[in-house]
Amino acid sequence: MKNKKALFLSACVLPLLVACSDTATETAATQQADNKDTAFTAYLELKRIAENDTARVERARQQFDQQEKITAAIAQTDVLDKTLIDAEVNEFRKQMLMNRYFDEFLQQSVSAEKVRNYYANNSDKYQSTQVRAAHILLRVNAQMSETERQAVLTTAQEVHSKLNAGESFNDLALSYSQDKISAERGGELGWLKDGAVDTEFSRQLFELEPGKYSQPFLTAFGFHIVKSLEGPQVVKKPFEAVQGDIRYQLRHEAKQAEIDRLLAVTDSPAEQ
Image (cartoon, rainbow, N blue to C red):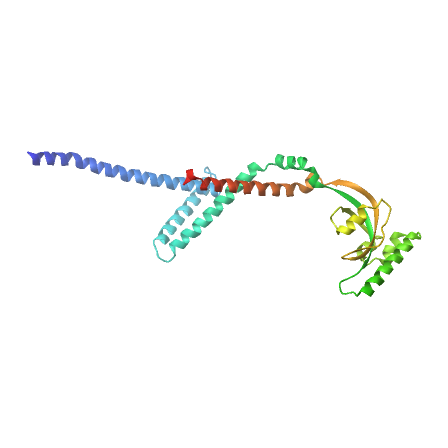
């Protein structure tokens, strides 16, 4: 009787087990096919191939399938160091994730409006006091003896005396100045902002009234006589000239802040 029951149960259960095994196999196959379809759809998007472009899709499918088969076959060999390949792939993946993420993040977080607002709220950073200046330069260098330096100073004092006597600054610059580029323009240097040149040069220049010239004074370049031609004026850089620098600064600050936030999230106890 027991044997009959066992045979009966076997006859009932065995088909169920076979059916379950067949179902599991079919499910796995379906899942694998779905994964492959999903991967191919992503591949089309990566290659910017429209799904309704039948001819290109077919060519892409052939190439995709061929590459899948080749790489699967290579994976079965021992020609390559798989550990090294995995490390390289992982490194590429990390770099790609970070680059793509921050490209998207910064595009959203540093908008054109934020750049313009920063310019408007920090206008003092983009303006300066400037004076239009000219000079006469008599050079000295570290190899000169004190006697030689004094001789240069004497020449500078002679030039200053000629200015006091009414001779033209332009003519004297052309005759005496050893800054040959500015000398050809009568000593003119253009507009200089406060602090952009030698400290002593700036001090002497910005203390002058327009049209006045200084006593001879020494900088690392030599003895100068400097003249204020015009100014001082407050000059503000236009937004178009600095928007690139502002965008770079804001993107750098936003990226660093986001890096700090991401690190804090991964280091928090809740994530461990």
